[in-house]
Image 1: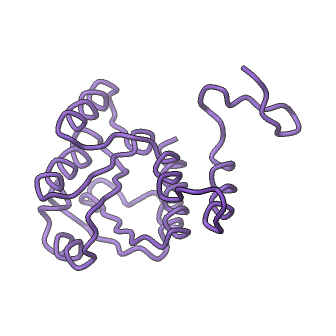
Image 2: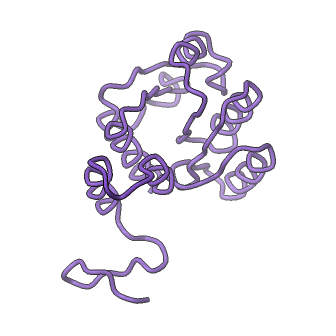
Length: 173
């Protein structure tokens, strides 16, 4: 689900023409970004990093300053390491930080849950990828909304009230 939600967000960033930075934590030892995520982020700039926070890594920090965006949407792994340290660091630098809980993860559920709670206590917005896309869209009478709907529909209906019949129509729970 983390990979699927990350791809969904990346597809949405193209609709809303948002800049995307992809970071990899020590890819020689930990491995590269999932190929399907790299494909969804085809036009994004890729940075290798050795610091857990992207805000502490030379090159990335400068690129973020050049982009001059007050808000940052975070996805990735591990929630309690790179995501949390990045979120806390960027928040301390006066960014509005949004962490998509369904597009971040940790090996251990407890680490994930505690990190999300800590970030929330620090003033970081913990939300979902789909919620972010709808907030970016704001209205249902735009071309962006029409372009976004197929992305939302292809992400599936894992949540409550999301049951569909064999024809693809929503059914009551």
